[in-house]
Image 1: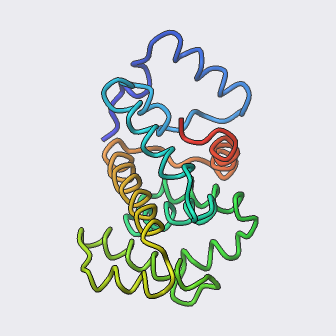
Image 2: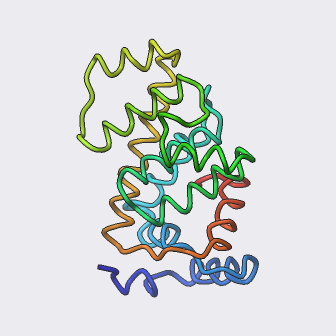
Length: 193
């Protein structure tokens, strides 16, 4: 259920920012932005910092890989807005939409490295069941991912399991391909802050 407050409950400075976004991008402001700006002191500021660190902080995973993880977790959750947003961002970051589509269709047969494949398998299991075992972690490490890469992937998974649930709970509108592409450009230039 989409609360009307996400359309109108903003301070004047935020309304001005949204007007500028619409003017420069010629696209609607994504509901994800509306949510983080609605009550920034309660949710938005903390969510932006956590997500920015997970997606753009130091990591052996590339930005493209982390965006692909976000799209994959969102696909497992069947959250259309986040699948669209992070598929567009992974496409732009990687420059390889064919690879991104292959991973989202079937990571087991996609042309990706084994550490990423094993990591996606583990993230999918964690997202579906809410738990993973020591054996699941050993599989990822044996495939060549480092402990730090596992931690970084888990941070991406946590960020997008939260965001996906909020997107579904608040009924985030699915953007046009142009809207998702405009968002991808922004996310790659400015990150999640």
